Image (cartoon, rainbow, N blue to C red):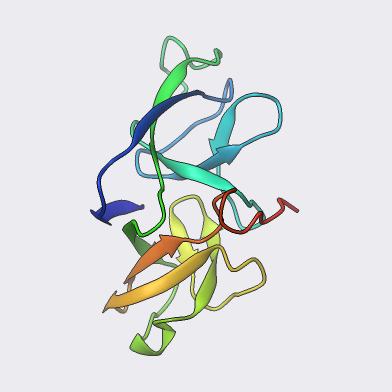
Length: 140
């Protein structure tokens, strides 16, 4: 999951995709139909981190209810889990996502995360490089 470690939270409310599960701390992006959905290995132009779980047993699961998102700003750093073994050599490099909760430190096709610090073999500090205002990374 993504966890803010620097910068001030910037909470904005966005409609969630109907009938879509979300994990608190997941990176999200606009799905092109007026809602947000969890990021994945091919998503670009991320908005930020959803601040609540959405599960199929929620009363509003099938609705496009407004949900809180911590919008990533320039300079904000987030701690994120990695999908295999991270190393200090990754600092200063761009990496991809494995899914909405996990970085893929072995891939750099989309370059959506900038590694700013090595925390452990399973965690890195990153900046979200693929915000619409920063890089305009296309979802493919």
